[in-house]
Image (cartoon, rainbow over all chains, first blue to last red; front, side, top):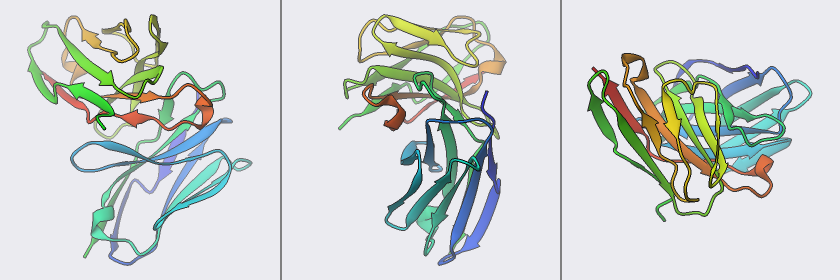
Length: 110
Length: 115
């Protein structure tokens, strides 16, 4: 069973700061997901990675398969980025759902 | 686009009551999932389905049942509600092709309290 650890658990930053959230996992995966959960509770998929790096707007996600580690970066952070960011992994074979980290609660203050 | 629709959004049950959480998707996805999210914990898989007529247990299936009679619908049944089932429940779906590279689409969740 994969163990997914995220750090930090909580992060408060000022608007404009560069944000990094980390995720590590214990066994090999076929894909890693970054998800965003807003205070209203809905969950949105941000990225899915199996190697390298992806960028979408101010968000950048990287993964190092050898080190079993991924990072989510937010550039020029804004209060609307305040949310819980969740890392989840899919095991090889894939059908049986994702294994989730506990999430990182991010607050961006104006 | 409706995507994944869950009903109800909120529900309060008494211990021992039963109910069905509904989940429907209109994206013709074969794979569907039920997760629960407890405070301070990561989402945990309850049951999943890889297509109509096929379901399998996830990490925390006890106290729940599912069925998948159509591609669109994947209801989750609680037969004898217990306080430990107080949680937020999320339904999700994904495409089959290239499953390793498909995102999961989540519903808005059902917040369930057992009193």
